[in-house]
Image (cartoon, rainbow, N blue to C red; front, side, top):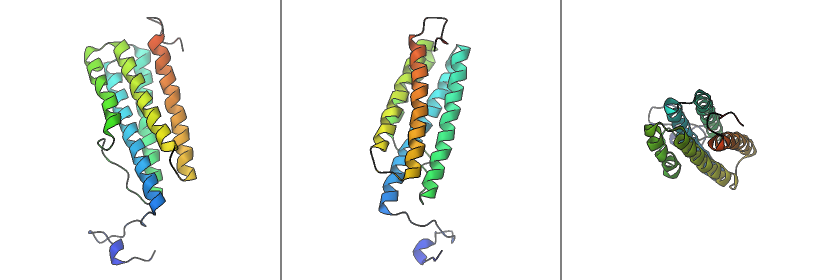
Length: 173
């Protein structure tokens, strides 16, 4: 790689190749998904800590772990495009607000309320993923986003089914 003064960071090490305009847009979209996944990971972790039903606890731990893996995968894709992955959960406040109500449900330790808030948070995630898919993305990134969306939709439907399952039968999925 040929470097210029502009390619050298303050520490004196070479930076990555600067992404083109299309990549910059894709990086911004993928970073929004990192925020969405981070919010979901934190939300499901909180729900798992508070939920009483052991089957729901296991589901929530699994979904939180899945969202963590999604974050890593999206970060790798952003790096491949020459960008820097988002490190905080503050860029997409709307998604974060979707999980705020979970705090109240967790405080009440009411399984039905926690389920409803997890369902609502996943609904927001699905909307965010669909919004990103409506934009231009490189083929590899689009494939990852579509696959992750499919997994989020599956989790959403599991939670939704458990929300309407008869008391004492959350596994009526």
